[in-house]
Image 1 (spheres, rainbow, N blue to C red):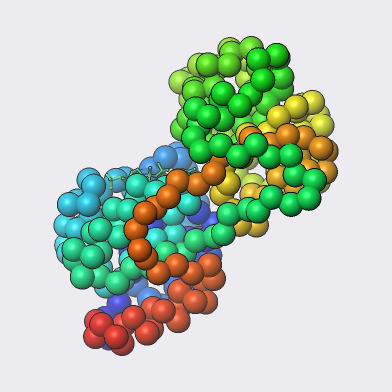
Image 2 (image 1 turned 180 degrees about the vertical axis):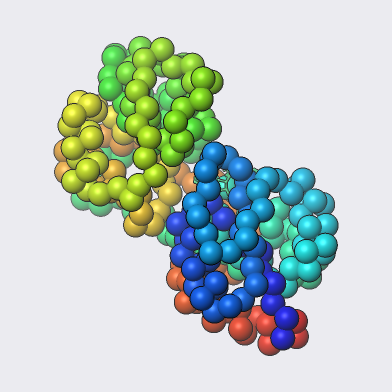
Length: 252
Ligand SMILES: NC(=O)c1ccc[n+]([C@@H]2O[C@H](COP(=O)([O-])OP(=O)(O)OC[C@H]3O[C@@H](n4cnc5c(N)ncnc54)[C@H](OP(=O)(O)O)[C@@H]3O)[C@@H](O)[C@H]2O)c1
């Protein structure tokens, strides 16, 4: 039974899956968009960069003789997820998503839910505030629309010279983050507002818990909708089980 997996990566879920797949001795390649300068060391081969839309992905799947695709991208990487569903359907290759549930508002959370970066910018007050932006680096410049605020940026890579916020400080860290560490960061920088994506999962929720503890308001950017039917699991074990069943069902 031939298996050759393509794992769409860029998350802690993809890293966990890579470990298990490698230990099981299953051939696989991890795919990254190339958004960060240094990808994590992994026990599997990597490829980096976009495929060139659905057509490019179909071509890649055929040329690399991929048997199964596991979409372990971030919940906000909706375009990649849609392309993966469409390309796999066209190429007749089984696909599963390894994902995580969104965070749910709890008692004590002071969230304002919004559905876009622009709406998050608009949700900030006009008076000067200290704002923690824990949203990655792609959309930071949208916050230049509110130039009066001081922004604390949490980034994986040191910032390039393309950040056009008048007042900011970058804190470079890949995590893992802790409740105590995030509480301390918010206190040290006298944070008034936290802006977060509703990424879900355990690895980055400490900022949400710290904000609740400190009574800080959070502008929560809700997830984009993938808008495709697909099989989803939250546990690596379930993906591994599917892998063996999907193989049998499809005879690959
Ligand atoms: N968005 C976030 O907040 C966030 C947070 C943490 C990690 N990430 C990771 O960063 C990557 C990019 O996120 P995004 O929000 O820019 O995605 P996106 O908007 O859904 O993707 C835009 C394009 O980037 C390419 N791409 C995305 N993920 C890829 C992957 N794993 N391998 C190869 N190409 C990929 C594809 O280009 P082509 O059309 O040319 O194939 C895709 O159409 C994802 O892999 C995601 O897991 C994203």
